[in-house]
Amino acid sequence: MLKENLKKVEENISKACEKAGRKRDEVTLIAVSKTKPAEMIREIYDQGIRTFGENKVQEMMEKQEILPEDIQWHMIGHLQRNKVKYLIGHVALIHSVDSLRLAEEISRLSVKNQVTTDILIEVNIAHEETKFGISAEETLALVEEAAKLSNIRIKGLMTIAPYVEDPEENREYFRKIRQLSVDIKRKNIDNVSMDVLSMGMTGDYMVAIEEGSTMVRVGTGIFGARNYNL
Ligand SMILES: *Cc1c(COP(=O)(O)O)cnc(C)c1O
Image (cartoon, rainbow, N blue to C red):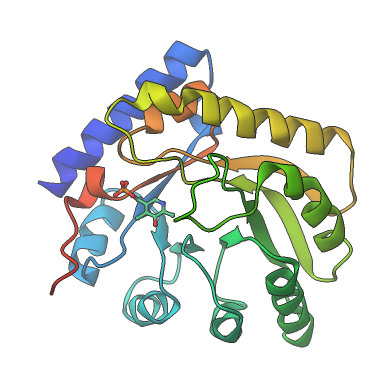
């Protein structure tokens, strides 16, 4: 069943790329495996997927220990500073940096461990009170400050769009964040590439791709609904 789910998602990604006149290899599919067991991840891995997203540090570490080493793990969930120490050196990209203090801790521990850590700045594009991320207005200032820190590279922006029935409703938010990333990229700040735009989830990844997403984070569409009451 997972195999068929993945096939469908891959087809949709290709369709959206085609519609937008983009190449399929401009978009990375992150299989969001939070709450799902290692066996299910293995099934998707066996279909060729190597990029997985988790939102809890502990869960990610446990899965890393028992799954193949060539998996690229992405931290997509809210990150507490006291958990950063477990991640450094074990994560391909941290999507959820939304404060200078967090960026400073990632930098400090990256220096200590002699690695460079790639990060995205999480933007709360729709100003939702229930969501993490900084406002669009504050993003440039945070990027400029974080860019001065050692051993981190700012690769781009991430956003979690509102939950909506009709994905078209999120198009304006995707456009906004895309524009914000273009504006920041134009400033040519050292250590800031702005090549990554992490946006689009199960409900809206096709629209996100049409609006320029380079990383879609799909959980339910691949692994099925999550059960948080286990
Ligand atoms: C859970 C999660 C996803 C995946 O959500 P689905 O709707 O299941 O595709 C994507 N991004 C983040 C940050 C998440 O926490």
